[in-house]
Amino acid sequence: MRTSVRGMALVKEAEGFRRDAYRDFGGVPTIGYGHTAGVRMGQRITLAEGEQMLVRDLDTIYEPVVESAVKVPLTQGQFDALVDLVYNIGAGAFRGSTLLRKLNAGDYAGARAEFDRWVKDNGVTLPGLVRRRNAEQALFGSGAPKPVDPLTSAERHAVKRLEHWRTVGRRDGWERGGKPTEAKIAAETWKTHIVTRYVGAIDAAIARDVKAGVTRGDALKRHRRVERKGILVSVVIPNRAKGEPDAGDYPEGLPRAYRKHWRKPWTEAAARHPGFRKWLDAHGMLSPHFSKREAGSKDGVSVDEGGVNKAARDQAFHLERVRHLLGDVPMPLGSWFRSPAHNRAVGGAKNSQHMSGKATDHFRAWVEHNGRARVLRTFEVVFARGGFGVYPAGSIHGDSRGFRARWTKF
Image (cartoon, rainbow, N blue to C red; front, top):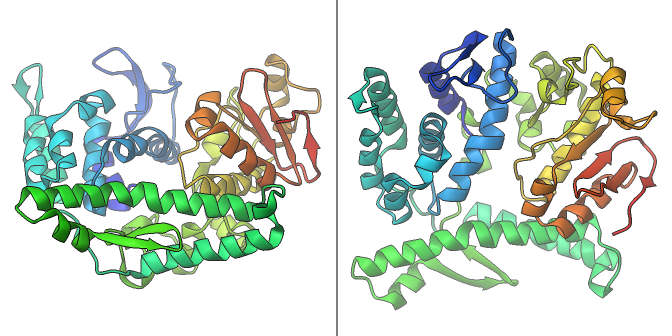
């Protein structure tokens, strides 16, 4: 789940925009909507750059905190409210809060009431924090997401998609010990997505019913679906009308014709659509999850100034495929475009693909977090016609150079 336009507006209103770098109460250089990473005093940004920083911070820092800490289903409004709270109080305070404990116990109303406790600074109640908590409570509501009847359209879609990839995989021979294919990776990803995301929510629902006096047998019948083709399917998968996301799931101003590409940026149709690419370019984005700003050289040269916009955009859509095959996980980047001067400064190869905007490096911690073997197989598939290698320190490299190049066996 990602922060909606409404949730992002709440963060913007509460944080306020600062064009010039300043020091916050703790003396940390800060800019834009409370962005702190890599900020230097004297730095100045545009409003568009501030929004890009906000989107990147939400995607790589704050949304993952909520997704990993919360073990029960959430509505879009509840997710937005919690992201704004974490943005304000920090991940550590949120993970240790009574609010989170009550929420994970299924006490949505109790969790909502806990927002009122986060209105003080050094023992003094601040009107600005009171207004922010009230806005978060209004978004959060008081009840759990309504369960849907089995089998939902989302469940049918998930099972149908998995069976499709399994069929393709069998044809490609991976069940007979053949080389891993995109079909196998997709099948494994979807199975993991269905089971890990929803089974915990079912168990929590069963526990709540038992606590309320329902017999465990009845609770199991009510919440647990039998295995279907080897996959546990549940009654708690969100089921929006006709499978359409809420309007808040799209960026403001996105033409309706491009919504399907925004929802599925890993597809060939999205990657090659000229109108969609042009709209992204005009809004400072390379693809729905990757901005021009984060692709820029560390010495301040942008992809536009470096003349590598198109190549960087092609690489971004390759990364969208990686991100999706790994389960739509956040994907922080270590290095992307390098200006020739910066490439020399960091000791890069003379003809490094980074200078063309076609290459990205990925942190070892991110690789390990998502499963090294699984990540390596995914990169092998996505960059089948590109470069791929593993550095001695454990980080990995992928590029869309257009022909196969490998320098590490695994």
